[in-house]
Length: 378
Image (cartoon, rainbow, N blue to C red; front, side):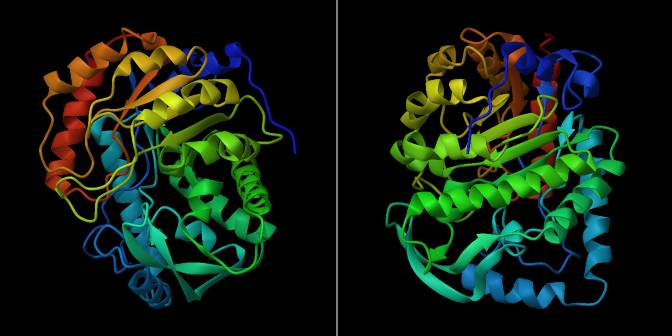
């Protein structure tokens, strides 16, 4: 497998309007505003939700039961439509489907992958042995049929057809999938990762065939295991986009981890120094944008100087705290970031997915984020 490369000119299309996942959705030329992935599921939708119950064993059983219920897809499509509409009304330029169909951001994709068993669960240590978790188990070679990849792409297509702005699609990356599954088949982690790359690449190509031009790989494991990210994780993440044209915006998202519940104090997160360790290799990897979190715990943003080619999506509201950041607070962090990276290569987003937040708090946080971003022009 070979690594793709993107020229500096093509990278700048994300901010020049040449790329369909670009400022074409932003005619006022203020800072582009996006989201990362998840949105709270409405109460009427009877689907399990990791943000409300993080037990994988419970989620696995109840999800299988829920999707068998009559008319569940009608309610999912209703919820997606509402989420798409609200994000646009709030002023977000690049939105997502809210990951409404997913019990978490990882497992919905994996339910379409051959070689995984969601009934045979394996107990594995999580977050540096902080707690054990029961995970779905890899029992054979991982692969995905073209039919299943096309099904995922058609779900994105429906959402894009309902939206006046770009809808990006989010995909868990190879290292994160490995860290979220048990394994009874592979003896070589790199071979395991390579097979996951092939699965993701098939999904990416199906999405592109359906018209998707903005695709995000989620790799929070990069921050937890930077040495593995440097060894093979970054190169494998780029290979998820192998043989993909330069008109597709390729994003990598790296957060530092969720708590177990909203407003949990002092929960274990990845070391933010990982961003410094990974910055230069990520800048050379060929992604159009790297998404990082900053709102939960401020970074020394001088490391942004290391991104000389790649755009940065700056996390600007905390997603696991009920405190609402003021417009001025968010503006201050944006201003600090512009000391180290040209504003033309900056986007604004929440730290991560919004699934933890009560709806009223979410609206206030996002409204302030949007107001702050719109006070900066490119």
